[in-house]
Length: 215
Image (cartoon, rainbow, N blue to C red; front, top):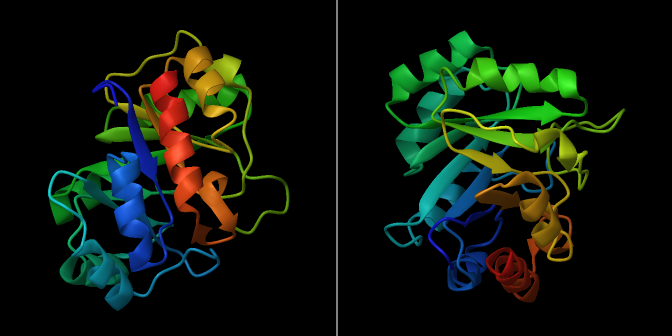
């Protein structure tokens, strides 16, 4: 894969998912710690999975409005390379988490309309990376992993002073168009490479990375 395109495969739930994700070409693997998600992991399971990830592949822990008690336990037990904050964490909270744990922080921001882009400017000042995701549909009980996309044209010509990653409803069929339209150099996929909620499919993971490569 070209060095300027990176893929994050998020929501891995089984240690058997690790080898095909790596072989497919993932630069990041993501573990979800949010009980309402079908991809939620217990700390001991995540620690076991993370131990099998080769050096050089970034291990990302996704949390939603987690308090310090949980983050203390998470970072003590699971060898992570980055924290992904996917809730309503304020810029001040992002700064606090970065300083307390000494890990890079990726802040997810949901986008539905142009007015939502203002939040990205604020978080770009305090986060190490941004995840530009679709706002959850009305009535959704989780902030991401809903297989929902947004109007990619909103991102045309938009850039921030930190690396950013495109997420939200990406699949092997549409990731090429998403990259072409937004100029994203990093893309995140979860439900788009699953055979059922929480169950990754090796062929879909490879197809997704191949499509990103082709873009």
